[in-house]
Amino acid sequence: MSARTAMSLTRLSAPAPSLIGALRPIQATPQMASKQLTRLSSTAARSSPVTLDSHSRPQAQASSLPTGLRAQSTTAPSDEVKLDWNSFFKLRASRRRYSLASSIATSFASTAVGAQIISGQDLEALGGAVMGLDPFVVLGLATAACGAAGWLVGPVLGNGVWGLVYRKYKPSVNTKEKEFFDRIRRFRVDPSTNSISNPVPDYYGEKIGSVQGYRQWLKDQRAYNRKRRNFIA
View (spheres, helix red, strand yellow):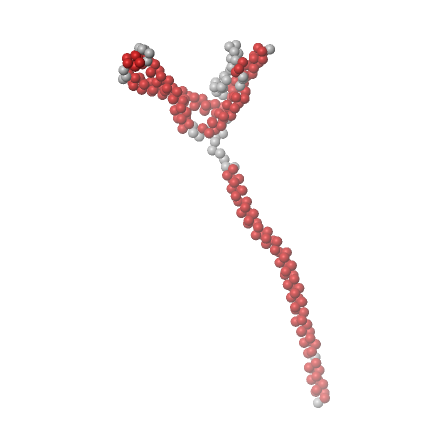
């Protein structure tokens, strides 16, 4: 009986170390869990700026959209057609022809209409009221006045028709014309020293019809200034 009891005791005492070893991991798990929590917190703290940057990028893009739209609106191409100086002078000459033709047409029309209206009036009474003039003189003066009125109205009508025909070039012509007259005002001579022997050469630049004509106009202005200096000297 003593040998059997000794063997049973050894069997019972043998598993005790295994139980102690099995309990060690259970006791060490809270420390490992705390270490894992600290690691997770440190990684979360490191990754937080990245998430802020990622959220801030759409805001930056959204804020940059209006500036892009403004840039597109400011760089939009204009509707004006670019003209060189020779094309500008050709269009300017065509506008003068339209004005001249319109003046002739309106002058004839106003003269005809005015003559028809005046011929139906009592010219003797009208002539007597106007300083006792002859009726035929009154008729001639009235007809000439009607023709002059039509001649003055003609350029307005002609410029309107020209603007409709060349409406695509009208803004560019206006821009070029402003620049042209700025040049004329800058380089033209002083008319205060005008004389019969040295007249002012084309003060308003109306005779300029091409680039070559403009260069000749500049030469005429220099020649006038040379004559004026020599005359004063």
